[in-house]
Length: 242
Image 1 (cartoon, rainbow, N blue to C red):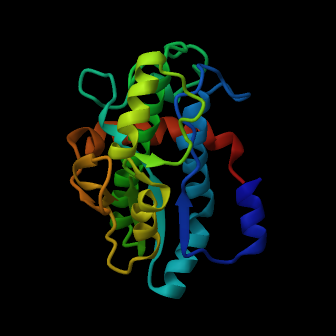
Image 2: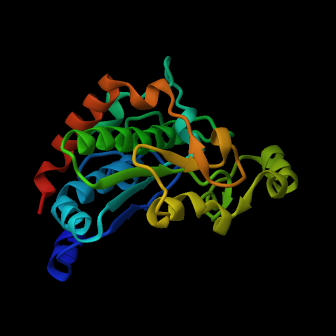
């Protein structure tokens, strides 16, 4: 519905910001059968990008460039897999059967699923950049991470008495404002110098600091991971293409 509404209202787009997200939610399936976090954080954005590509190409022709900015996270570097990479099972109709509802500090099934979605965001960007470069497109594929930002994204989480109190003390020192956390996203959307194929955010996936280029990890640019993401995501969104 969103892409259909946009298509009916606009003939071109200069920037598509893929910023919707949920974090560490229960192990449940959407009505379509997918993990709620994966469908919200990645598959919905993959669908929007595919559906709105003609409008983005029109925007690039009109303005000299266009932008697709995916919003990743520090969590992309914390996947609980042997090689810290993507796992295909998280992209299929396995919602409700992906690790349960355990929540620990950056661990447990709820966070495992979240980390997979955030890695999917950056892998999507690197794959998209490659495809756009191969087609000589003027569209820039960019990603960002907000560091540790006070956005309320984790407001529903209970880490237990000890960690809840630790975070009350250390959180203000470790985190930055939501406005500062948004700088990577804004840079990707608005800065003329923002480069395609680059992820911007606090240095070295840090929790705070200015938005600077973060070098890609092998598991983000792995051709097999990109191929798997494209295949499974394309199959997932096919019934919903406008």
